[in-house]
Length: 108
Image 1 (tube, rainbow, N blue to C red):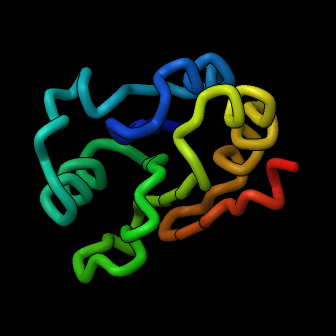
Image 2: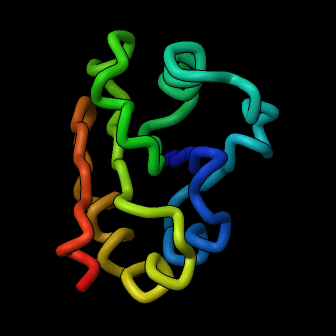
């Protein structure tokens, strides 16, 4: 699976996603793209998008055809690091068009 990590997602998360092809928004030079423009660019080249932007669900231009989206509850690396395997499993289970929000209870 080709996965893009949003600029707000800690880069070390990719170590838990080693079986996938993972790029960051910065690596793609998409760090300045916002909202709909970013999602359109991601959908054209990736299967999944991981972000911490809780406002994504309110974006009118959220692609729903092939891009799967996972919204993490925080961008705090110490918190995410201890749940890296759980995040990796959630990403692996994504299907085209999925929109999944993890919540903090899953991190306790």
